[in-house]
Image 1 (cartoon, rainbow, N blue to C red):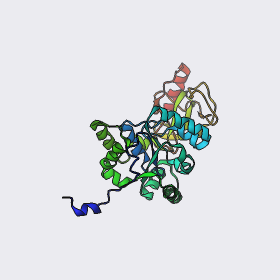
Image 2 (image 1 turned 90 degrees about the vertical axis):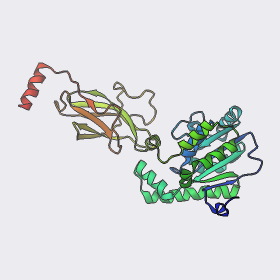
Image 3 (image 1 turned 60 degrees about the horizontal axis):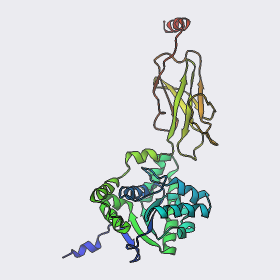
Length: 331
């Protein structure tokens, strides 16, 4: 006999579904939530269950940049073309993108038999994650996330679509409840190994997610070193960030800063430049500032890690005159 109190337990999961949708062989699972709100955890679980999440979707965030670009800046025809392509290839597929909350009312009718998996998270925790990842004002972010949450609730309240409502905090405590619901809903017959992998994928702040979602994350490398100059390239991986301010350290001490905004095509900059990709830097120093075996490091000033090949050991050709000059300086 079931304990009557079990009916009073809040599992953090509420399915509001038409009876027929579970048996419908074709459907689209649309993950909806605020930024830093847990949508990646759900998308990752869907991926582990073998559900297609987009042609250009990849871990740890599992966002299909192809469909996202069409929804956010393309035409309705562009969106429908991609959706039709996915429908033709997969009876059940999934799409996740937090910014969808600004466009979902417009594209809702284009999804085939959509079921929305809507995740809600403690707004302070989401804002704190955004602050840590990008250094933004936490109070402004909380206001924005509260407004975004309201947009989502207004959409599901007005349209009343098939929906599964999920608490992020309770999901972390009992991930198997949602995973089992997703298996039942998708009808894809996931194996027990896939089920266990999906459950294991739902965990708080995995390292790869923390790294991938940093808006202050910079890519780049040191390309050329002489005794008075360090060159290379650096740019933020987040597309909306401006040119990176970078700093040069020699043997652990910061000695110079500059902006990575130059075009230096002969120093190993990434090929295929587009607008805004002039990201070369040059630290022009006094002759003899850099000595052989000095440890050189460059990083974006607001990043927590250095560029790809930092620290770099200086290996300089030394002439006889140069050797004499260094001996005199050290004497």
